[in-house]
Structure formats: C-alpha cells, structure tokens
Length: 404
Image (cartoon, rainbow, N blue to C red):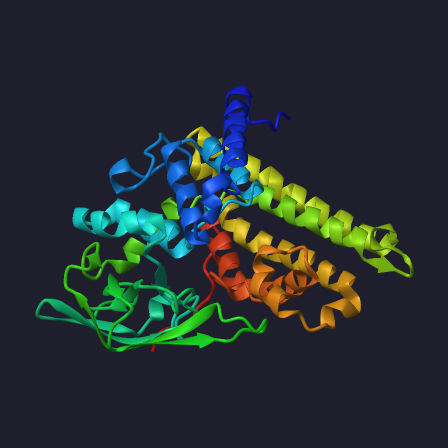
C-alpha cells in the first residue's frame, strides 16, 4: 500500500514547508510589530502564494486556486507543523464564508467575506437553545418582519466566541405556523446593539469559552437574510458540502507523540512511566486507534481527490464519533500519568497559555476536563450513532410514539 502523496504533491509539500520556515516566526523588522499584525501579515503572504483560502475567489480575499484535496491537506499539515497563526475562528472562515459563497447575495459576499478572512470580523453561531440542542429543529427563538427590519427575540446557548464577536449568524423561527423543520430563517445580526445580552458560561475547567445570548427586541436589516425566508434549515445544510473533515490523522498523530513524551517524562516507582507494562499496553492500544484514524484520513483524501465524495460520506460521519472516544483515551492516560501533579493549582501564566501548550501539566489537565464534553458537543454521540445507522447503514428509524 502506497501512502505517499506522490512526487508532484511531495514537491509541493517542500515548497510549503520552505515558505513556513522562512515566514514564521517573524524576523527582522516584523518583530517590532504587534502580534496581531504579525499574524495578519503571515496570512496575507500565504494568500499571495496561493496557500490559504484556496477555494475562495480573489475578489473576496482568497487565492482562487483549483480544488485539490491533497494540496489542501498538505497546507494544513505544514502550517500546523510550523505552529503558524493560520486558523481563524471556525464560525467565520469555516461556516459563514462558505455559506455566503454558496447561497448569499453578492452584496453580502462583498460586505462580509473579506473582513472575515482578514480576521477583522469575528462571528458567533446562534443555533443551540436551552430546549433545542441536538434536536435543533425545536428552536423557539423568533424573528418577525416589521417594515425594513427583523425584530428578534429568544435565547441562544453554548455560543462560542459570543463575548468577542461583532456579528452572529443564526436560525430563527419566522413562520410560526409552519412545520417543525420549516418556517426557520437564516439571519445575520450585529451583536453590539440594545436588546442583546451576552453572559459567559463558566466551564468545568474554569474557562469562559461559551456564552448564552439573550435577545429581546434585537434588530437586523430586512435584507440580512441568507437564502429564502423560511428556508433556513436548508441553508444550514450547505455547510456540510464544505466542511471537509477528512479524518484528522496528522493531528491525532501529533497528539499521540506528545503523550509519548509525557510517558517518558513521568515516572512510576522510580522508572520512566513508558517502561511500565500497563502503560505500554494502553499506549499500544491508543496507537492502534490513531493508525485507524490515519488510514481513514488517507482513504477519504484519496476518494475526494478522485471526485468520489459520495464514497466517504459514512466515514466522514464516523469521524466525530470515533475521534471523540480516541481523544478521551489519550487525555485520560495523560491525566493518569500526571498522578498527584494533576491536582496542583496551575500558575497564572499556565492558565493563560494552556491551549497552545498541550505538553504542559496544566495543558493536559485542562484538555482532559474539556474532552469530557465531547460526547455532547456538536451533536451528541447518541445522535451521531442514529445518523450513521439510519443514513449510512440504512437501518430503520427509531420507534417513535404516535403524535397526539
């Protein structure tokens, strides 16, 4: 089995790696610039070279390259390998941008896409509600059209980046008499306005990554609707065609390497933990799972590069479910290896930087606590199993009681 990308793409990999080595971290006069400007310059240069925002037209700030799944994977791997600041908020670049490209009006693309790609416009997603999480179609937040404005009322929760976002894209019920999945519209709105209150939610880790958002008479222009009125459910499905979650193999392998380093650093009864037979068995088991992820990653890349995207539908649905379990295995072993060190209060500087330093004790503990939310985040694991069984394997739907 040949798992290489082939001569042409490996040459491309060398070009990308050389670019990263020369461009990040900054050198010379660029070191005097604020960090945000250093990061922005790196992204600008990456777009100029055709590496970043490859599928986005130049008139919106992209590099407008032909789609090539292997090249996109190489860029992601090499940019991550070099710890470059290329990943902006997923709600903006990963969700609203492809949605506007697919179904947005031209003025919406021109207004919202360029500043989003530059990082000047931060978005949050207004989907989940206290009574509508995995069953999103049960949402109750409403928007009514009065003159040339939408008047929005409701309550959104688990809203990532809401405390920093300037804009929200969200789902709101605009046709109250329509069916459950109908009558929902996809609206855009400004966050800094009367009628919107953002309250951070403190997590088990102590961090404040998520928020709840209360909307009481918030307003949005009438034309800040994406797609047709009452067709918001169909608009949200557009993201599925663009979110090419192709396995995460390199990311899992890098995480496993960090786990190995921790096992070498920690000790059990005076010897490196990696020499303990129980630890070695757990590491071997995790390595097998990582290899499965890597193989799935390569299979999906190969299929997409041949234009056979339908053949990867089921594996792509399984990615989230499988990797949720794998991440918990990795972080659970890391937490066990830390032993009493995992109970120590972290230093203030560790708390400020733990997300970028998984190898630190604080990083491992925080990641372990955070991974416990995986089975309920982005669609619960039970919902994922239903989707895989019904849509992927063709099994009958769950038995439901008759409606009254």
